[in-house]
Length: 186
Image 1 (cartoon, rainbow, N blue to C red):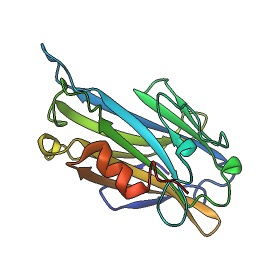
Image 2: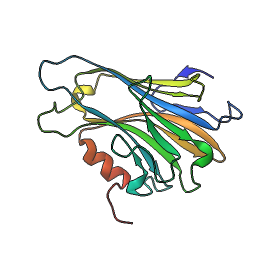
Image 3: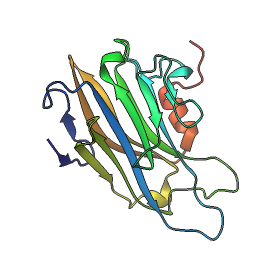
Image 4: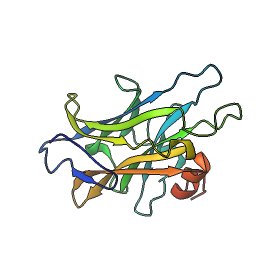
């Protein structure tokens, strides 16, 4: 299975690839070069329970916390601009989905939106590098948003699937935090 998804489309990963026990989620973007401050994009994986909220703040994976609490989701930095490794066998049963997003670093000197991003995509690959699916995000709203949910790996019965999302935010990291319960005491 190799294919390009559109917003809202799903792809069966483990059902169509028997024996698939891990994936690498790669995030790539192209940006217009700037003579001033450029947009600093921060990819993040949010490990969520059935309520759509992060299990704990230790279950965020980003540049400053490179693996989830159980080490089933790990931040890599390889051929794509950012890569996140997911070991399905190690993901606890309490995990319903893993959300992959990118937000604009909230530095006040940075641009206020993703307008300088010309293209962005997420791809899911087998550990051997074979591409399973890709989702190129439509760029027409980039000048209005400062964060975007690219897609999510989720459980469907005993199988893993990927959903292409493409949901933009005008509230950046604040919106991602609110929607996924990040920073709330449990």
